[in-house]
Length: 206
Image (tube, rainbow, N blue to C red; front, side):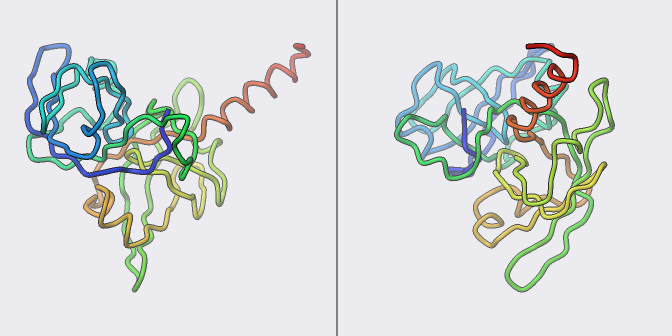
């Protein structure tokens, strides 16, 4: 589990194509201070497992399912990525409960700068078998964008907006994302649990 508070910007060092997977090597410092083999680190909001590590890099295996469902498909050496270690019992929950399981990929539609913050509009993916992700979004609710815990300004059926403060713009990839760029989205898991419980209640399940 994560909180959506990015600890550092890492850099993609290498991408090894394995046919139905890739082996992703990332340069980092902060997240490697206590990382061991098998530990979880979120990369742009995707929970990946440390397979190997050195003093300055770590490697994860990314299977085809993850490539198909996230923006990690197409990452290249030199790309910056948001990194966060999994929470511990002593960690402050500074953002919200984040699983590192991407629900869909959105697209940056437009950026509207202001003097001290920036409004960013992001599209939601096309509705799938389970409907649209828009049903999980509410004004002032939480959403994770590329692993960053953010507050929804305005929620729509097919898009939403968030406001980014200078700290977020400087310390995460969201300061660099431009219209047309793809971003990983994870909605609030609590909303999904409530939906499931209400569905069972409507059927008379105990």
